[in-house]
Image 1 (spheres, rainbow, N blue to C red):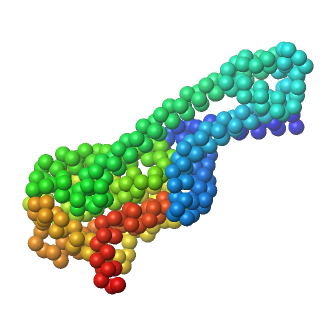
Image 2: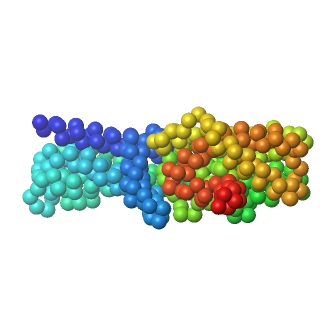
Image 3: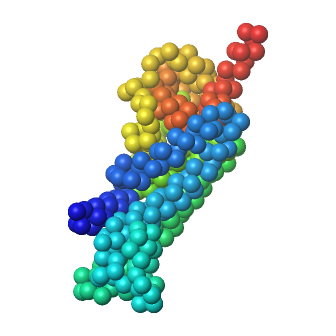
Length: 368
C-alpha cells in the first residue's frame, strides 16, 4: 500500500509532462492529451453561456481563459503528482529542519510545490539520497515547464498577431466590405494583373503561415473576437471567393494568373486550413461538398460581382452563362466549410458572407 501513492504520482506527472511535450514541443493540432480536452471544455461552457447573440462577447475571453486554465492545470497536476510521491516520505526521508515534521497531505503538496520551484525553497529538506534526487528532479521539471510555457505563450500571441494582421489586411483591401469583388477591384484596377500579382503572392505566403500556425498552436482556434473581420471564416471566405471569381470571371488572357504558383498556393493553403479546423475542432462535420440547393444564390452573387470588376476596368469573359456556372461549381467546394466554421464560432451569416447577403437584399425587398 505504501507504494500506491508514489506510483500514482509518477504516472500523473508523466501524463502532464507528455501533454506539455505534445502541446509545446511536438505542437500538432489534435495531439494534446489534457490541453485539447480542456480547451474544448472551456469553449463549450462559454458557448452555452453565450447562446444568445447579445452575449457573444463572452466568447472573446475564451482564448485567454484557456491559456490561464491550461497553465493552472499543468501546475496543479504536477504539484499533486509530486505530492503523492513526497507524502509517504514525510517524517523519514524528508523532514522539517525547524520543528516537528507534519505528515498530512496538505504539507506534502506544500513541499512538492516548493521543490518544483527551486531546491531548498522551504524549511523542508531531503535526508536520504533518493529524496535528494527527487527534489533535484522536481526542480528540473519545474523550471523546464515554466520556461517552455513562457516561450509557448510568446509564440501563441505572436502567431495571433500575425493572423489578426492578415485578417485586417484582407478587410482593408476589400474596402471594409468583406466583398471579394472589391478586393479584386483594388488589386487589379485597370486590368493591371501583373501589378496585383505581387500582392496576391504576399497574401498566399501569409495564408500558408496562418495555416501552419493553427497546426502548431491549436489554441489559436479559440481566440474569437467580436469584430467579424478578425475571424478566419470571413477572411477565408473573401480569399476563396476571390480565387473563384478569378477562375470563372477572367478571360483566357488571364490564364497565366490562374496557373501561377501564388494563385495555387492561396487556394490550397486556404482550403487546407478550413479542413484542418473542421477535422480537429468541430463536432459537426460537413459533407464532402455542398449540395446544389444554394446554386441560385451563388449565381446571384456572381451576377452582382461581375459588374464591379468591369467598373474597375478589369476584363471579364463574355460567356456569362458559362462563367456563372463555373463560379457556382467553385463555390460548391468551399461554401459549406465556411458556413459550418462561422456558425460554430457564433457569427451570424450576414457577418461572414456580407457580399451574398447584399445580393439577396433586392430579392427580399421585391418580395415584400
